[in-house]
Length: 286
Image (cartoon, rainbow, N blue to C red; front, top):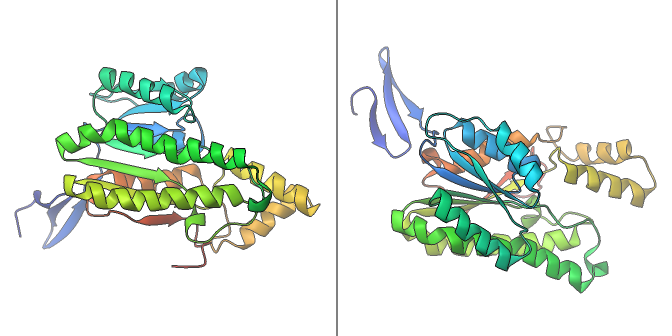
């Protein structure tokens, strides 16, 4: 047992209070550079905000430059923090790769990559056109692979990195009327687990955060679609969804962001290759 304030393991410190010792969990991200996809709204914006509060320098990635400027202006900035953005369409992988190269040249290596983008529209799997599957594959798996190929060489050189993919609880149990989404999320989950094995020896962790029903624009679209199909009201559709959640409420985007931040920091250093549901207990399997 070391003296008060002595670090005994990466991500933790023992401090003495009176006659007892307590663990002090280190979640600070000072000096880290985080690249956050979908950073102008919802879970992406909430994650960027929390990472900035923890001391990270944040670069937001999205298509709309006006919204990116507004989002960056909302981020807290302390000593050594200079936040920025990259304008790119996630589905245009060639342009995305070029934009990332410029970002890395300007802002330096990325320590934390948060892969996050909007989900495919609701609908039944057997009714979806081939183009819907192709678009989802490009917007999610191919875009995420493009991001990984851009940032992982630097992570390997530094022998440190965090990759967090924001996907869905559908990787554990498919969700009704989200056929294309269920399909592509499962592919991303398997890709992520493969990366965790490949990159672990370089001290790079790869994990998935699985949001449940979260109060975002996408949830509103799902509720509206559910109401249209059932012939009921949106309030009734929302009530049916809430009844499936043990906590009886929808998540706030920041609550998903907290899980992402934990996996990004020193305290999450030994967590690798997992699917972490943030769903209020809705998913019916372990």
